[in-house]
Length: 460
Image 1 (tube, rainbow, N blue to C red):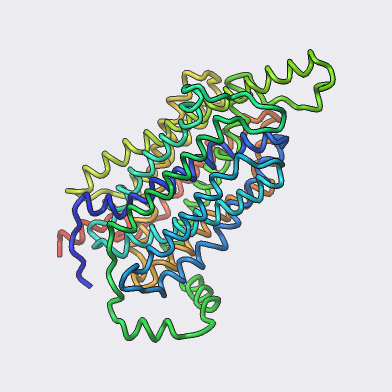
Image 2: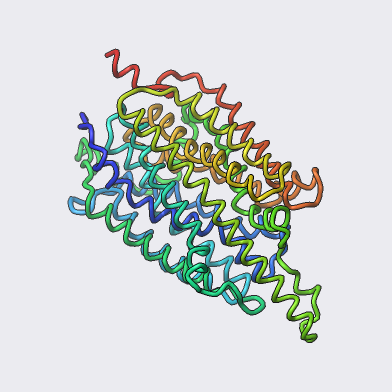
């Protein structure tokens, strides 16, 4: 099928739902560990509490990719029904997460939230490949990254902004502050509205051969065999990208799960108070606990705001790439390599320069890596696979995202960081080393079409 080139605003409209998705991910990534700590989790328990996120991605994304490949409605298209279902469920989960009365309830809501976000997110990756000619793939994924950067920055600053407007950061023992509850409610609203905007402003191409599509759709019980066959026939470039993805997502999962305990303790000197260390029946000790808890909650607001910087810098990074890739080709391999190494340096700064003034520099560098992770691997992959299987391939590719996170969650972070010492900040050291390894792994990519497709278009 010859696909026409789309304008910037057409690509913007089809990608706008990612604003809401990123509100969900940014609030989850920036503040779930804070909620867990508030409800009594120790810092060593936190990575395991996060295992819901990668496990749901491992299960949900290939299934949604497979189903969306086999879905077609003249009114709703192929991918948009899944955007809408995921948005409704995600918005409900976002609203209720900070109201969790106990740790196990918060863990359960994380399962629901992450599963629902994945229902919306996976088809967005496939939609770019569905709608755009190959010469615009880098451009399309970079526009998505631009929107993701906006969402990350705004959502990460929501608790701080709400607190600045006068909503309290203080709360009773084991209760999430109202500032966090309001921020999550705002995020739920933005998630739903932004997805609805994309659903109603974007059309989709019908299957190229409708008769063949209906025959494939009519086949029964093909999901597991199809998944196995697609894994077995995985292109070499996809496998090599998987190595890069492994180290990249191990690093970012480490940040999402451990940045709050690491930075509140190491940089702000305001760790979460351990309630067992206080005699709550003693008024003075109860007051001391409340003072320490309020300091921790305010430090957590600051950590969240600093984490928003990586969304802002990824947005700037994406904007530069949008301007460049709209007219010229890029070497995806070297852009990705340099960006990941710079992100690794950002994590190392946290360990060796324990000052909040340098956190801005750290997260700016991490934002370069994040902006590249959200665009370059998908652009390289989409130029290397069968377009008829784009949904299921993107779902399978997600395995290279969730497997490192599962390994990190079940003990990888705790084991490796404890090799450097017991301090929580050592998790950021591990993240930095992992991103540098991810950057160097780009030397594995040799497929010229994946590295820079546009030059081949120009030479045809």
